[in-house]
Image 1 (cartoon, helix red, strand yellow):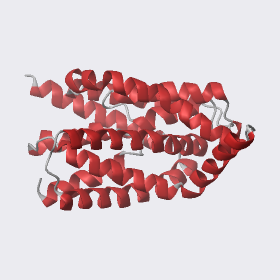
Image 2 (tube, helix red, strand yellow):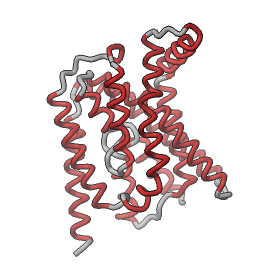
Image 3 (tube, rainbow, N blue to C red):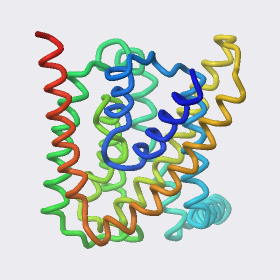
Image 4 (tube, one colour):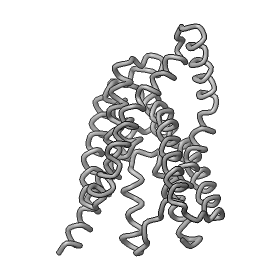
Length: 269
């Protein structure tokens, strides 16, 4: 990869990882428009670690409180709000984690097509708009129940399908369950920590087993740039959805989905 490719792809990954617009739908454009090859496993590892650093740094206070609550629950067998939420995050991560282990190869072989990405971009964009418009927006993180936690965890499984957006589908589920916009975004960000960490470790293991030569300069540039961009995006996003809502992202997804369908249609003529 050239320096320009690393910069562009790292910025795209950093922007789209936590916004409800799907990173896979955007990472397909460089290959379509510029003829770039797939970025490869080394770059995937780099940007996943970069976005993980960003969200951990942004949520460092919340994660520290959750860790204390979780440890306290192990020692005293009593759950405070932090301990319950920490266990809830682990429970919500299990469905997507298990589905990823089972279906990862199938998804890579059969679902990474332009038509699938276009369809999921449109479908889950409409669902996000419906949930934002009709959700009660009353439930806070402290009030989030086990049933809702499990439903959001199950919804996260759909993020295996390219174009869905992990953050988008978990925020949609949160809004549908009555969470406030800020609570749905915060829970989605918290839920991203174990899942991104799992993906980064899994891909790192594949990289080690494949005995691939590692270009450390590429890794550091990709990880650092994606971390900075992702952190700035998270900070901006929480304030934006509190003031404006999710509808701009819904409109963007619909326009993007139609554009991808048009590219697919004209490409198959």
